[in-house]
Image (cartoon, rainbow, N blue to C red; front, top):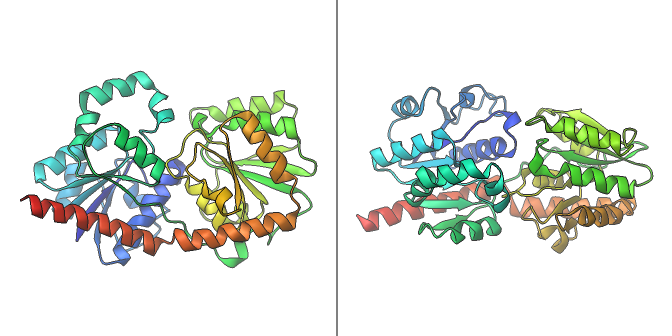
Length: 365
């Protein structure tokens, strides 16, 4: 099977999709799929996330040039919506008569649709709805996202396959590098979607004794300056620290030094950093904007309302736990991730979707 996988970027600064699409492509190649990988910024060739992996055909240039180099795929697998490259990939797939799967990556979730709403309304009318209706399958990474996609009435099958999660080396599991301070960690893009103003206000209200909050990740749209202003205005400068972007070589050590991970997000289709934190044995506090009710079901974290009050109550409970209790919760989370989100299993599930699409095409011919 030959699959052309396309995405906006494979640079670390792009966030979770850069990691999840890269790792899915590698896992598929390990299962015998011939995978071509392309992004409009050329990062399929240059991204350090991919390092020197030789199992993939890494493509550059514009979409037509990349396709000419790779040859006709059995399936186009596009990641994301709204962007010009998504439109171009849809046209190429139609021209070649090949099926196209679209992974929407949370970009059609209610919060995302309200962000830059007017531009999206125009794009939806001009091309985006039509392009999705002409896809052969929509891929969601969680059941809640699948329900959203079905609500649009596009008449396209929707299938759920979660993201996989890398397993860290044992040396980096939480608890191996603790100091006197107890640390809560936020690690993601510093973007308005991530809810950091709510977290700062909740931290001000709780101000847990002996704890510090570390905020790590790349700035987007100048949002870090807004959050820093809120930290100063809340007189939290001595207990809230900004670490800046964290490259892939240092992510495990940052996770490993934390007792608690916090993602106060307004909207996630999966939340790669939640899976990463759990894989490192760190219990997680996140909002209902992320599809992780399993945190409470598995007793490995807190799933709270997407409000300051919800985050505040979660923080009171989490920071009120002693280190041993948090460590036990983290161990349960690590076991859960190993069981449910291994990349081999995820690749096999995605292969089943590909085969279903190809089979339905043959039946219709």
